[in-house]
Image 1 (spheres, rainbow, N blue to C red):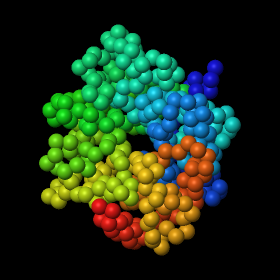
Image 2: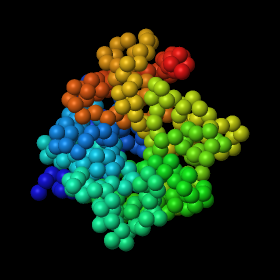
Image 3: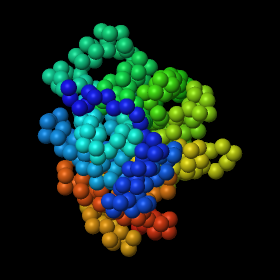
Image 4: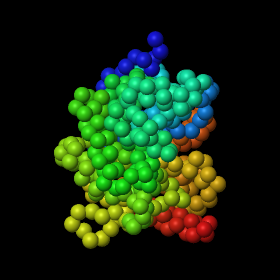
Length: 387
């Protein structure tokens, strides 16, 4: 039996993540590298698992990167999605966690594991079955969904499919409990297909599924992984109000609901989550940024594409606060993880060289608010020059 099929009991806990943090500090991590979130110590750098093909070499590279990042004490936040590399990324995480636990390098309660569901995918272990045949065989023929449940981008919010995804992700990763599950780019996939009240009903049904999985211990928290809906202009059809989403979560699960996280893109080129004020909050006539709104409502923010899939590595940001950081990637990661309101950027990495470069940032203090403000000014100036 493979390690991924040895289902690991437990989930990230206060004591477990505290132990991880304390050991990381002894290995050289800076104390500011960890953020205190929902009584958990989470690394201010998380690992993403999006990129790569379906090769066994990419499997080995990804698994090794996860193993090394955790072993060094640099990362205890791992992010994926059921559709990433057609489920193979989740399976790599399962094998890496199994090895880490078997080798007594980490315990399950020290790691915060996140995935996403909503997009349809086939199974990379059966890549010879095309996606439409897989869809028919596994979902249409089993009466789990029908064709009306699928958006043009192959996004599905049918509660039956969402439930199926959670159980499949648990199996892929060999876990009894997932710490965080996001509904994946749901509004971006449906805003031009259904009216807003219909989408809210669909989201309500998804949140009902998440709350039911929380009650049986298969899920701790849930959220929304997004692209641009939280940073769009308020008068645009693709704009989504965080306040409205929180109301839906409260209606479904009461004040103790599990909606505690969102994810969105943010980097030195895409600074709108911090700079663009488009979100309303209670008892205020002034709009605030999505990061400010999230803080107001007690929602925690992870960010994606901190390096813009490598496109920003040639960006020259000359600032005294970054002078001691040795690599272009660490400078870009330092900007994101030092942004007020950001828990951690999620960086995709597979090669050992890139992994070792990225995790160096864990040994440096985060920027002070004054340093960040100065750096943001330089970043915004660079953006204007490049535009």
